[in-house]
Image (tube, rainbow, N blue to C red; front, side):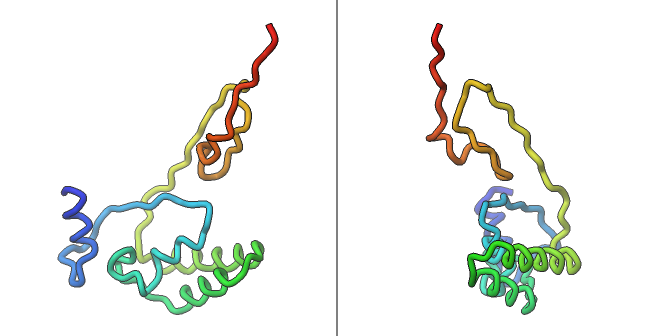
Length: 128
């Protein structure tokens, strides 16, 4: 199925499908998950019409502070609830690996990859 038709089908007010395969990519900000699980995102991003008021409350609590420990606790609870209720069947989680030449400096790998700060990379000239 071509992409526009896929989006039309998954965003339909009254879907004519039992299951579809899709995916997301993580971001550094965990609150982005709210767009997937929020009732207000039905049908666009929450195409399975998942509704859980406790999950919504946890997101609101986590999104109201910069306290990383507090936020981590709330987002972990969101993940626990979503895993238990299984609105989606998560088929895989991809890990990626990268290798860099030691001459390239300024690389700061994160859980999301290495390319985020590529403007800061440099190769130090060596005296020969």
